[in-house]
Image (cartoon, rainbow, N blue to C red; front, side, top):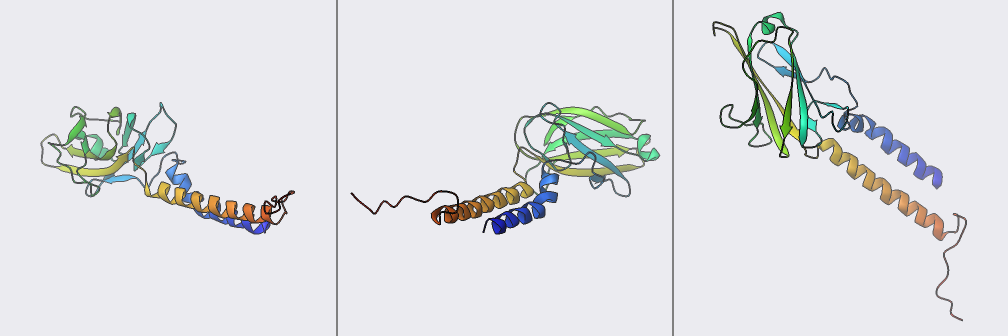
Length: 196
């Protein structure tokens, strides 16, 4: 019985390990987190270095001081004027007005090395959108991209992890209780029905 419970626990942990690793931010720089700029792209990473060293793409675990990093390898993007804004999303679908919902904004400028990192202090938990508009000097060409992310919210992966942990605790507790009642844990449950 103990072997079966141990095997079940290993199977649950093995099945959840990729989700748990992503939820915990155990990736250094995830290449699957690009911001689509309509034909071109840049990478997005967010961190909270005062709390941990994890790099996140879609879910910062807590409110507070954070660092946003954007990286564009394309030479054409490096020669454009970057307008970068952090918007408060009006819902989980990422709807946000680039003018009315601004909670942080960088001065419009060029980043010739193709990379920018900046501090953003998130005071409220919720959904946010990184808005990037890159425009040529003459205004004839522009690229616009948005990247949705959350701050201080429980992610779907974390919910599944909590559910799996709860199921494991219930199963392990039930097995331990059954073994204890059968006296296979080294001691038996006292019989309270006998009276002196």
